[in-house]
Length: 226
Length: 215
Image (tube, rainbow over all chains, first blue to last red; front, side):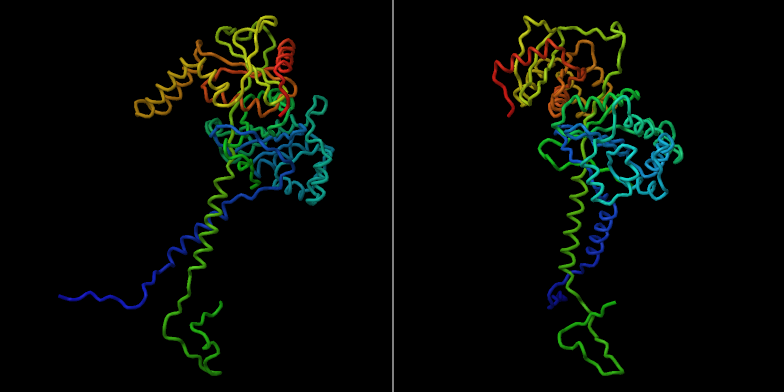
């Protein structure tokens, strides 16, 4: 009977495939990771047991404890169309092509249109100063800019979707959703003011951003600007 | 590319012209690299899943101008939750509000508080929902049928409803808490309204009676 030869050298494992795989996964996660845009405000949403995830295509209004409203909408193409539409509605707002580009990459903002150009071109420090002094997007009935952002945001989204060949059925299933992220300590009346602006535009269904109960402070609404 | 030379000391080996190629294959210890790769992998996997925000869906009613158009609801099915200025000012009453006779009862958002009351009040609906869930789990019905049946059950005419009433500076947190409790208790017929003046007075009275203060 032949004897099985036991190799004398230390058993060495070829790790190359494993390393290949590991790096492949690392690369994948690094590339798919969405980096958070600098957020101009801190809003710590209340916790709930809701497990529904925030929809992908979403218009997000953030409200801080002082009741200041901030606007964000996902999708770079949508944002670009949105700012162009807003420039038509507010002819006083003159934006260069570069500023339009920067706006489309930007995240949440809370500036009146009068200061928007300055805000877009500003560096981080200037933005911070503007945010600290700002009162959010005006939403009172005389100067309801938030309402205009919402309306134009909807149209911009629809334009973008049609351009990308989305059908009516698809849009019904997976259209633009509206989310409100308010700090837990905000007065409800201030949240209601924003909701009333939406209701004026015949929008009645909202996703309230919440933290999952028991994991306070981990969830954060980040929209990508891609 | 960096050259990998095996063994110490032999680095400068070889004369000007010819370099002697080593016979044995060059092996590097890959363990640290693998460690690093997996560390990064773990980080990105965890970071990717943790950043998903959750959302709670709330549907607001359309404004109704004409009072006659408003849905008539049976007072016997009504529970009203009054949320005051402070986080612990949570009161409720059943039926219609009568300024002189209605007694506000204090509650909270713990599992023993408002949830117990609503589960109790809504027990008929909850029993039906549990039956449906059991059917869904035993694959007797499929998901769409379940959703449809669920909607029917929670939206039925006999299902109790809840009105959440707020004042100007009720905290958003409390409203969400209340909605959350109603979700847990399968109370889908609910509304958020402004508190009437008479109710606000009753809340203030009751809370000074009980000595409720900001935590």
